[in-house]
Structure formats: C-alpha cells, structure tokens
Image 1 (spheres, helix red, strand yellow):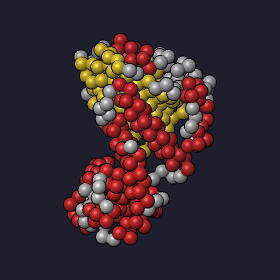
Image 2: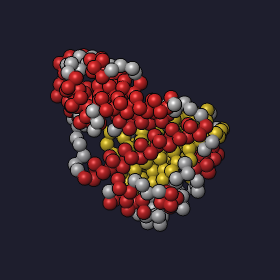
Image 3: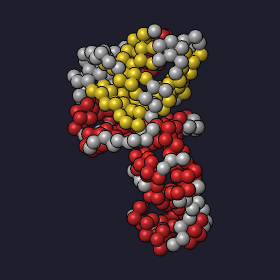
Length: 345
C-alpha cells in the first residue's frame, strides 16, 4: 500500500505533488492541467481545471496498480469537495474516524475537513476509478458570488460560510444516473481554448446545482427507497435514452415490459425514481422536447411536427406544450421566426 500526503494551497500544486508521488507528465492549456501516467504504479490521467470563482474541477480516469491512500491536509485552501463516481468506487473517511464509507458507482458525496481532521481517500488497486470532483474554496467563492445561496439548506449554508474551518461535514448520497449524463457531457466537450473552458464551467455549475438539490431532498424528506437492482436501473436508463432518440414510435407499456424483461411495476418504479415521471409521462416529455427542437431547427409547420412526433391531436399537443413551456406552439414558432429574421439582417 502506498500513502500519498497532499499539503497544497492550490490546484496546480496538487497536480505537481501527485506527479511527484506517482510520476507522469503534466501538460497545460489555458486553465486546464492534465497529469498523464503510464508506469508500474498507475495508468491513466487526472485533469485539473481552475475557474476564477473559487471553484476547481479534478477529474480522475485512472487505474492504480497498488492500493493507494491519499491524505489531504487542511489549510487555508481546505475546500468543500463534491464527489461523483461514474466508474469503480473509492472509500473516504476523516483522520479522526475509524471506518471508511464507500462511494460506489453512480453515487455522490459532499465532504469538508476541519482544522483538526484531514481527508483520507482509499483507492483499491486494479480498479478503473472515474471520479468527478468539484472543489470550492469558500473564502474565494464567497468573495466572487453566493448566487446559489437561495438553494442551500441550513446545513449546507453553514458549511459554505464556515471559512474558519471549524467543523467537518460529510454526506454520502444515493444513486443518481442523471448526474452521470452531465459528467459524460462534460467529458465529451471537444472545443478548444476559452470555448472549452466556458462549456466545462457550465456543466460544472449544473453538476454543483444537482449535488445541492439532492442534499436538499435528503434533508427535507425521507430518502426515496427503490427495490430495483442497479442492473435494472441501468437497463431503464438505456430504455429512456432509446425513447428520447425515437420518441415518435407508438410505445406501449406491455411492449416495453416484454422487450426489456422488466415487469410493468418495475418500469414505473424505475422511471419514477430516475426521472420523476411515469413511463407515459416520460414519453410525452421526450416528444415535447423533440417538438421544441424541430420548431427551432426545421421548416416544418406545427401540424407536420405534431404528427411526426407521434401525436394524433393538434389541440391536445397545444394544450400540453403550453402547460410545459408556458407558451403556445404558434407563439413559440413566431418567436423563432422573429429571432431568425433578426439574425439574417
């Protein structure tokens, strides 16, 4: 087992210290630093991106060939960490605790050390760990903005304003496949330079909002229990993606159940758990999203769009479109045309 002790004051120093412990090379472009490793200790990369509002992103995609424990020392840097694991798992505890807590695939955690306790993260060998970590340096963040303060419950608000680092805090969240989609979108940003950084920043802000919303749900109500297996939830996630890609198909619950091998009760429970909608509500949502995209990007009139996405009644479509977006389809289409005319002038 190899122990790595990080005592850092900023993200770049964290990258350099990791390099000293596990080897590899650091490349840099704009505010993005990439540590690439391929040796007897590890293979993969760790990306570090620094934003100017007290927030940084650390993205692990790496396999360690020895058990690794990383201890993060407290300092003025001592950030709030928001973790989300898309592959593998890791374990976390504070130095004043005996037992680790496992953060499994598709699960999240929020942790903050104190002036008397450090973070200890345990990575088991031969496991490809893909870990999205957002860190917030509170003093810098509070100087720049606290425009998410309206989203914070009392516990998280107290964590954000504890700039003297007096209290440790840990929350280990439930499974969230929706966050996995945003992490994937973040990882798939292909632009370069400042455009790349801005796109990633937008996804980071979205992920941060989702972490906070999930914690609020946990604090304000009993955690939603689900009887489905993780493999069944993954299957439902794939089904939802297929529906979104081909929303015009005439779906029936009987057919979806037969093709997926999942009972109708499991389908309804899974869609409700993952997306907050029944199967039929999710299909309707996917069709409305496609209709909005078609109004933005195609020359089809509203009647053509209605029938192309699987609806048979224009009046019903108009009703549910206005309920969802607060505007009628014809008004939305007019706004698109006006906006396009302005762009062409």
